[in-house]
Length: 349
Ligand code: PHE
Image (cartoon, rainbow, N blue to C red):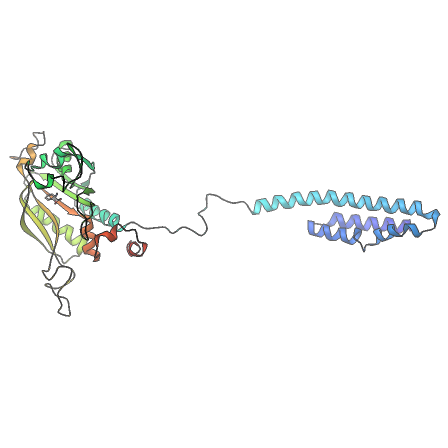
């Protein structure tokens, strides 16, 4: 009997020592100390033994059980520690990785993409890009741009006044003056930015975007303006485009023109099936911007003798980014550009 107990104890110790996982250890415990295992059974039978054997066998079996229990507890601690370490190492989370599911990369808004394309065209022609304030002095927005004191654009029903002498700029043209004040000629700049007018319908929003252009050098003529705008029109609307200048009036250019680009949607106002082109309304021309030769009066507002109208000349133009984007992509309503409806925005970029 004692011999058997020693044998069971030795087998148990070997098994427990050899268990490589907590699961294997638990199996070993059940095998050696579980309800149907031989050693516990033996212990339970001690009472039935002849009295002279009970003490000895009982003590030996008890010691064997306690030894195994202690060994199992110690082994369990070892294995649990190792398994926890392994799990922690495997589960380590890199919080710098992108979220799951990955966020969509997004895209540029049509207006941003169009502005950048326009900038790129003029950068390619040797212009640089400037920006200026949206809250502007009346002096720069109107006076220095040769607006008569009673010019209708000065009216509070047309323009947002922030103070007596301060407006939300109604165009990017005030930057013509600011650019000349801070840079001597020759000057070739484009100025993109937000502008504000008291207008709101399918083709007007109170806030919209323009790109101003200004070139001042010796001998700049309308021919330079036309060539520059032809290059621009072809880059944006396609290589077969033509431009035409129509007489117009702006207080700060003389002569002033409106510039049309030939319609890219039709031939001479008609679609292939003979119907009238809706984009150019059958005229075969699309109005894209206002421009002209810088009025000599304007140079007088720039307090710098290097801007002497006897020695230099320049052209200026101003275009609406919304208008360019809408023409190009046949967007029917300006407000779509500001509604933030993804079904619209995702069609571009
Ligand atoms: N500032 C004018 C407008 O907003 C456009 C323009 C710019 C015209 C430059 C001529 C020269 O209508």
